[in-house]
Length: 405
Image (cartoon, rainbow, N blue to C red; front, side):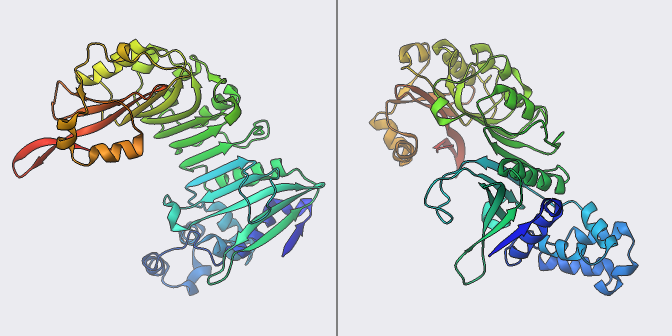
């Protein structure tokens, strides 16, 4: 089934047309407890016309998206109330040229996917996605309609005389606006995000971002629109450029990088030893350019002496060449994974090698608490450090419990 919108209709009607197809999906639906609380609050829906605007806004907060769309068509006053009521949008993703849309086409095609999720749990089902692509001078928007006990059906909408890339970004940003710019997680993987026409100024509650680009200025632009203190950060570049494109040292001083507790960079990062040693993150992964074996040695020694990162979990330090392992372990007290350790640690060693990989492993114990320890694995081009030993008490006895973080 296909619908067509003229340019003057596109602004709002794309939301209305799409809302008719998510009627049967579990998108932002209130629980029975929520409904009971709502009815008690307003003393029944028959009193709706008597409520002032503030009360109506509180009521609309309970409605799922399709219900909001129906309500706003009832009257001009209801339209204004719905428009003023933010939707709880947890995350928005905008990604160009994904290749696995086999339900729509077996051949790859230029596209931008917009995904909107309303609940922090992906498995809640409170989410949807639209695929934007060019169709001559027009934009085709496609999605799968899910109806209980039926196979998903492909639906589409034609936006006349417009560019698919620009329309996808406008749609994604409108959902961010509908959530009052309070989105918690943001993913932008687009080669040419149109920052000149973007309506995003600041995302005050965004704590997790994933940005893919080949332009450090694009990273900088997004950092200016999120808080200094993030919870999770991922920076990526094009797969073909991963081994050559480098995030410069100057940019790595950004608070969003130095203060975040977790980050993952799918590219080279020119951290100096000083920057590396001052990171607050307890879980990191990046390809090293300037970090040296001595810097890694000092990183481990700081943890051993109780001056390392709090609640350390893991550090995966990749290199384009093999590390000098003797320089990394210089001056460290190491316990090799011999038969005695494997017997003491039980099934941990098997699980670790299955999940993290095989190679020569050492256990490195804290001088502050000997029951706490790190696992050091060095498979050639990577130094992998994991916080695996934890102090545990059982039946009045204290011992080390080993697990993968």
